[in-house]
Length: 302
Ligand SMILES: N[C@@H](CCC(=O)N[C@@H](CS)C(=O)NCC(=O)O)C(=O)O
Image (cartoon, rainbow, N blue to C red; front, side, top):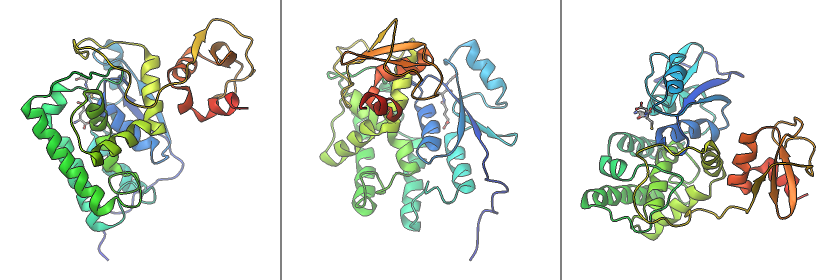
């Protein structure tokens, strides 16, 4: 059998480094992060607020990249999500990143490539914003042309290859990585869609990995100028959060942070109980969506 790629030289217990921007607004960063998160690939994440000096400084360590996401390993920098997806799937052939079936894989690559190169009206008019929901948004005809093409592609994949699971090709693949921020745009701009698309969009909003990403974005607690629309807001269209609130003092039910195991210093209150964490970010990401964090739910449900 002819093999297009030589075997990747070393894929052992190496950790990749990934540079990302604001989790709330950077749709490409979400894709970059999902490539690691959904396929259990070890990664050290570096994040910086976009359009800041910190962002420029972060990327100096990822030269020659100028945008996020960018990944690096073994002194090699890969600076575009398609290149990252292909590099990671080549290096981790057992991770199931592309569909196994060759025809399904070809279609998945088509969907990813079309996402990467197209849908500019949707992308420009409905920028990803994981803080907001605009029930009254009125899409232009150009946006509707994009959404109708996307629904057509989703329906083809779901009908032909999606019977064994809720994702485009049944199990989660790189195609779902690329359409995750598209699903959030449909949801938060309340774009018209059919039942197949709606079920697929809900699958993304319910995905624990996506929920954790969004919770970390909310914990970053920054409104990036230029990303909000001047429209009435509705409630978040995904699962409702538990009513956790940050509080100043303990004592907490747990002595050690559910994530790091370190002594607790920062607290939240939920259902009359106080829980502790080892830093404000881990506390705040839990306040944002407590049920998305298994480590926290273990101590909460004890
Ligand atoms: N084609 C790139 C797109 C990367 C991109 O546009 N990244 C945006 C964030 S979503 C960025 O880095 N913006 C910062 C800037 O423009 O300075 C990819 O696929 O990764």
